[in-house]
Image (cartoon, rainbow, N blue to C red; front, top):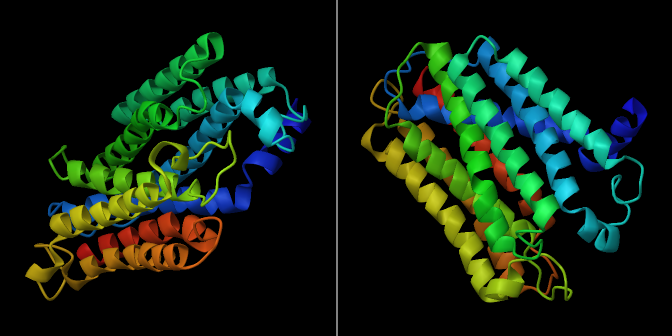
Length: 304
């Protein structure tokens, strides 16, 4: 089984890139929490942030396994090279991986009760979601809008977990500053979800939002969600109110949220003015890591 799971990780979840992305997500989102909370003086990533990065890495692996189980019939037709679709790993192997990984993450976060409870809630919700789809076939795989709506709570809870880590590390109590951060990250992730499936001429059964909204509307939605993420971030950080970072806010560091927006603007120009069949790959891959890196720099600048 270990050999089969290693083949699954290699084929569906390349560890080097996944580790960089998970670390950027964990540290960047935590940095944004620090930037919008004026009580977070001299915040710096620490041991708790490192545990959070490992947790996000493993958690995303478990979610990849859950998605592969849900997508198995589709992948057998459209992505036969994927490890589960080609039989290199068995469905039972992924169930064992999910159960063992969930138990390990709960133990790893045993010193932070709120974080542990949030992870447990996410695991339970994911299990219900996967079990319902495998047993009843609902929602159907090509119902992409329903699918993303049902999956959104998983991401929200994972970002709330990062907030619980931030509160535990800083000794602070919960405040309203978490809400704009959740909105910023969720809107940015929704842009990524739309953009990575944005194709000019999709195949008949290809899972893309273009089948639902059309190319122009999907492009507008993708750009709109990225713009909304930037607008909420600017409203929360208000970089125009101070020339230097300090207790009142991140100062000029807050303007860094415009950098990922520039990545989207360039990609939108290229896609709409050119004849490329898909949204530019560099923007699909680079948008979220760029955003998370900017969030980290803003957090460090705001608490320096």
